Image (cartoon, rainbow, N blue to C red; front, side, top):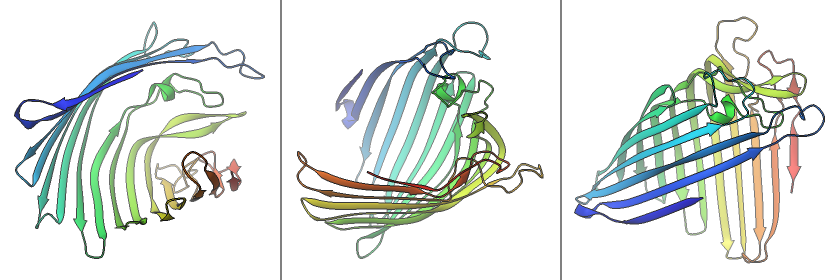
Length: 308
């Protein structure tokens, strides 16, 4: 359930408020999973966002969010006695400033969050530069800080098992992309790199499941390309390609510089749509290369492609 209200406040502030609540029940049955107790997860809270224009070249915005989360039926409760319950509260502030005849946009931001027992800070600086011929250059640099989710900590999702001992992950990251827009097309090509501390990533957990673990030191980088084309109101196409190069940097000879589990090096997606919205024909192709399921590279999932 979600309730959203939007309007104008004093001093020309644009306000957007949202209240939400969700209850998820998960019961597993069948060979190997029927012994698991049913789990119920409650999530609820509210947030208020305000934006104010200062002059013609600056916009300030802030977001305040408060919520809570609880789950029952936890098999391993590392949070203490009783059902795990977290209070979540965060404050985000952002400043958007147009410079150089409004061709350059700078957007510094800072997010402070309290998630259960963790206090997290995530600063970021983004920039967008408008170029001739419908081109624009986008770039971001920052430090991310993420607490493990309740799904990763406590909820068993079929063959995805929880791990109540997870620690928050931290990362320094940077990305840049060249973008082109027209009336009938969109194209973007860019690169990214991140250096992680205590990265939360899944790894195969025999005999047939996977569980999230902390990887003490890791690096992930690569390239991304995507495009859309709509030559006619009844015809459109889209495609994307991602190259991911990851490395486990923990000082253990068994794993050092191996690719991280569950991160295929190549991923490709293409889609074609024909017809009006009420009667659409669609063809999709999703493909990915082979990749390791464990940090030692012993278990490997072969490459695969799905056509829909």
